[in-house]
Amino acid sequence: MTNKYIIQNKLKYIFSNNNILLNSIDFCKKNNISTDHLKYIIHSVDNFLACRDISKGFIKFKCPLCPVIHKFPLTCKSKLCPSCGFKYSRIWSQNIMKHILNIEHRHVLFTIPKECRQFFFYDRKLLSKLSDAVNEIFKFCFHNISKKNLRKNKISKFSKKYFTDSDIVHYGLISIIHTFGRDLKWNPHIHAIVSLGGFTKNFDFKNMRHFNVDTIAGQWKYHVLKIILNGEYNDSKIKMKALETVSKLYKENKRFFFNVGDGDINSTKGIIRYLGRYLARSPIAEYKITEIDDDKVTFFFNDLANNKKKTFITMSAEKFISQILIHLPPKNFKMVNRYGFYSRHISDKLKKAMQPFKKNIVVSKYSFYQRQMYITFGMNPFFCPECKIRMIVWEFYHYLYPPLKKYH
Image 1 (tube, one colour):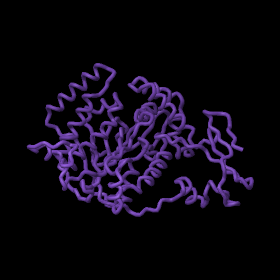
Image 2: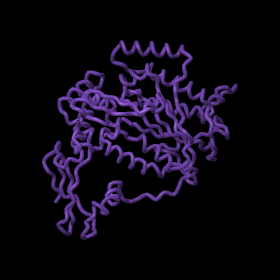
Image 3: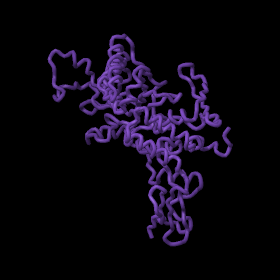
């Protein structure tokens, strides 16, 4: 049984067993994880284990007028770390808040059948195509493409007459890719936040509260199977299995599952709360780990298939670590994607049309870290408490990049 003093760092405690960790990394190596991806996993684990360990890395600030010094441990910013994940989520949410329109949105969950999930493990590049597929589905709905396909006289997509005055041309969509289920198994799915309305070609706002369920389900099935069919698999057996699976599912009259969240999200704060829940999450929250006994780990999850019943799982520490490591995305992989009027590059006309729908939000000039330190300790860590002026970087140290760097 674990000692009480390490209760706040359960994941780090489990990962700190070198032999078990090496076996888990070896498991990843044998299970189709690319060399570059494996290097990034090892790098992320090293950073996670060194997170907030002042002997492994620190930055020192000094007041330019007096001897006051503040010394801070370095953080890992890894997706493994619950603390850094929470911080990233809060910072991202704060940054996106000023772009969110104060209109109704809906949370939609897009899932993948069990027999299809393995192919997204064998070719990780397919995951990003899922987000694009979700965007194509909503584009199909908002742009009324089904009606346009029925036109006797076809109009080019590049023509000014392609969209009618009633079509919603500009909508808002944020998608988040997750690869883990509540039981830590490989279960890729997409959380989407979509605006219930958008702007016409004349930049007038129009509500759209209802989507055709059969259309979304049919489109989702089509896109997922097409993505699997075009995957780049190193193993010819996997390629053949993908072909057989796609062929079988095309013949079956089986709907691919998607789920609409309970109720609509009616405010900017509500959207931020939703996004914060799903952003940069570690595959498991530390409070769900109930026991660490020798080389075994016990955790619980609420089983959605069994009326959210609290279910406990015990597995070897090696398997537990392996199940977490496989969910670490490759370096620079985009887990969050923004489309429509939430994308980073939009026209000035669209920006102007959006302005009346934005809530006036005061953006703090202080960083998340500064605000949290002030709330907790009543101080700004980067200002001298005596002289009331900004401190300067004095020293920096990281165990991977010695020696100590001095800036004075």
